[in-house]
Image (cartoon, rainbow, N blue to C red):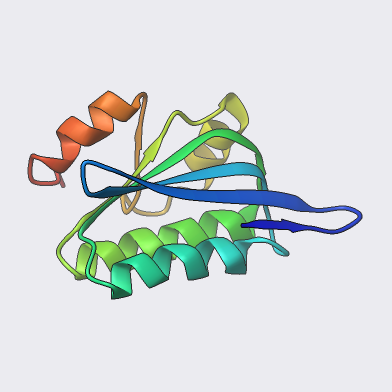
Length: 125
């Protein structure tokens, strides 16, 4: 999926790796695009997936709306008994998470391998 207009752009790629959904976010997750991110992830959670990995290494920008969209999905997944893991944050995204993190609902991990291994173990609290 690609959503773009004159000022905003986001690409959402979804594939499966060993029956685990892998979502790649490329571009900007902001007030305009956050609902699309939330919708794509929520759909997978509603379909019964209990482990989802989101690759954010090409997420150039995230604002408060984007942060809250991902945070709400992490909470929804946790309440469903699963894990949603964010992989390879850019420096900007990591800084936003360090500033805005109100609770430990989303886990930021360095690599896809670390995330895949993390899904095989119970989440740490």
